Figure (tube, rainbow, N blue to C red):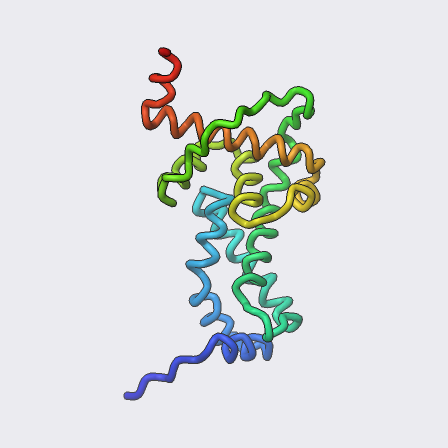
Length: 189
């Protein structure tokens, strides 16, 4: 029995544009891991992340006819996943306390403590951040959104995004220093 020849991403997307459910399933299977990886950065609970992935695929299938095949599919789909995750988190985020900028702690310019960590270490440290700090950190540092875009997505001023990013970085530094024993040594001096 002969195997079906591999189908290119372009052909797969075209078949999905035509509404072929078989190829939508193939697209789902092909990009499932990619989508889960992105979703986990925003929603550490597997069930929540899976819900976002499924919702993102539904949105992608509903709007795939608008997708320009001259551009790359991954960035287009990534944006759908991120926006779906943010929409999911927005319900929780609107109830969080938003501190005034004047009340923000001064963040010192410590050496970049996380530069030498590998991805697994960073993800472990990110899991320890409060939700709002983790979301803002992911959007700014990993996905490359501006503070203005983050503020629009999450419904607060760009200045709050800057404060949350600073707090996230400071908490990451302290967590890393504590894990490495650095924090205790410097506080004894």
